[in-house]
Length: 463
Image (cartoon, rainbow, N blue to C red; front, side, top):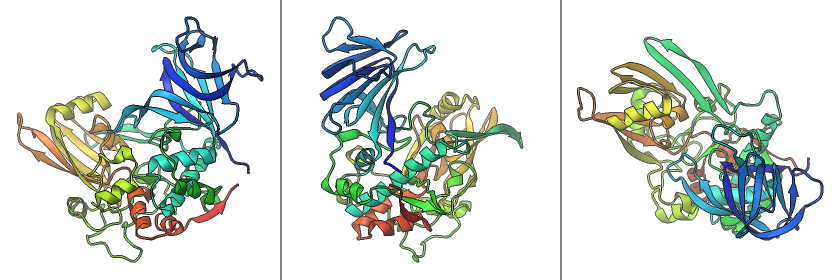
């Protein structure tokens, strides 16, 4: 198969957009076969009922208006475009706006007007391998050991091709899944899971919901370029099918099953195990789905590849965006009673009154909560799966759902606050990025890292 070309959603639902063309681009309007103009420099786009009006910086009149404006570089790879105020880390604790530059084509596309008015998306059309070079330099530091960068190139390529194949199949995974709410034992059970965001107009987004893709703004090291070139077209396969190679920032010492975070199927290559050298014995009691074992595990700090406090190593391995996060292996968060009630009201539309208790109902093999009961003076709800729990208990997201709850103080016959003590960062399925980075730092090669986290999967070159 030839190298795929991707449509990556950079910005969604924007009314106005400022950008700069660094080099010359052909401008094509509404899928016209021939360019309307050759342009460069600074521009502003405004979306209205008639489409997208394109204004040169400082101009009094728009150059033209269309439903789709495609800016295609005269020579691929020689020109780039910069988007101003692009939001990075949407809905996560590191969310901020940043100016980012990209290679490839920029497509501005008007969407159907809604109650919020006319809006447009900014989409980057780019080759898969160029996309991957940016991904591995955005997800991790481009200064990482070559072994990690090669392993990450393989899994990022595998995940993407698996998503594209699933999207083209009637049996593809939905972007969101849910079980119908039900009443059971006097409680309302709400079970919901989230896969990639529902991208109807492009293949993947540029943010953590899919894979971090921050264009050429992130410095590409010679080893990152070499890692992509050395693994060109390589993917992980299981029984001939491209692996859905999930990964998270930090497993917290034990990886999780696919079904704990998403649908009911558990691929054979995504197993739950201690993040230790194969054959190593965990220094804690198993299984972690047992509540007493989970509490001891989470409140401790047992050895694991991802249990490192060496700031020099972490700053070398992690991208600058993650340097401020120091408590990825074990963390604490305190939620005040009033804040908890407001979160449940705002996130889930629940009015439970004063919260009396939060009680684990079901944990996965890594100790992550799959279902959590929340008891209030006006009712009881059981939430799942892991991301729904993380979203419900934080203005953004909790680091993970592997946590224990400790009520503190008293306020009108209810706890004044709840202290959450947790483990890991993310869903914990598949490769642990910090664990894999430490493995590479310790001398493991890329194939060994892949064999550790995707057990039984095989490498195959698809193009």
